[in-house]
Figure 1 (tube, rainbow, N blue to C red):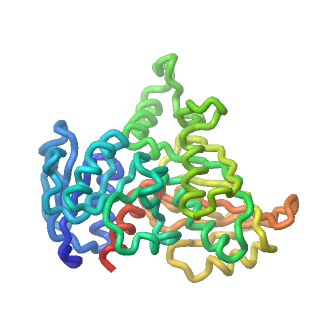
Figure 2: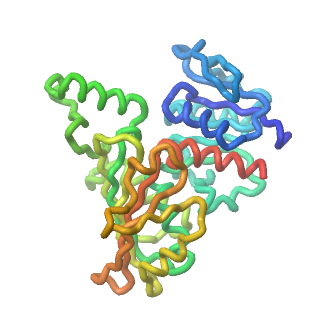
Figure 3: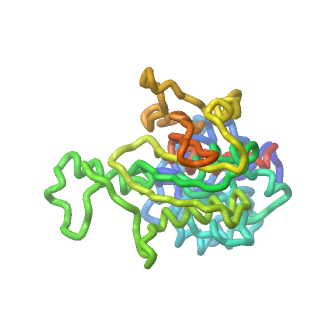
Length: 330
């Protein structure tokens, strides 16, 4: 693999995350020598620009991965389950944004700032974590290293962009036409709050289960208590998360602020008395994780509150995938 002239494929290139992957590759000057944009047959012929050159979307086929070095997948679980092994067999490094491989013990689940070192010399399918998990663990990993995590409680305030372009279209349609026309069996997102799909008999949503399992896997803490409630809001731009954590060692807000200082991947905005704190609007279109409202929790021996915001389409999906790809360039 020529690390300075890589052949890259984007599977799901016309979707919200796929389009953002293309943007991030260009912004970060990723060494793309050859580019293939792949999607379903209905998207064939759609054009996209990359580094001043126009590319045509091609149909995703079983023979699409010949001579491709890295394939970035964001076309859903069903597509990934079928085509990621085909790409792997063709010699590709596959970075998959779906939930297809995240809990597979044989597949690495990677946030580069957290556990990127674990895929040195690896070649195969790599899972990109859930967007909410990614931003949370960028904040929690340095805390765990310094103080030791004992328990994590998190409630999410998630943008409808997490549901992709269909979610955005649904919100816009309801805002333009009103929610009176929403089918009786379909809950509106406009002027509303929603939970993700719930099929677990214990009452947990798929999103909540993902965050629990992925956090434990990435941090290699299989018994870490993680309590999660995930909520969708009628907003775009990013996800907010309210965290309450307990640590093994004594922890203070000032110590955590110092821990985060000087990092490119974390921006602290923590002056709430002057109305300065992270918002999803502020993080939209950005790659860092924004952290604020760092407060002592005196209801626990070593407790702390955190408020975290990040652009879920970028750091929560596209940028994290490209950062994984960069591990094979450095």
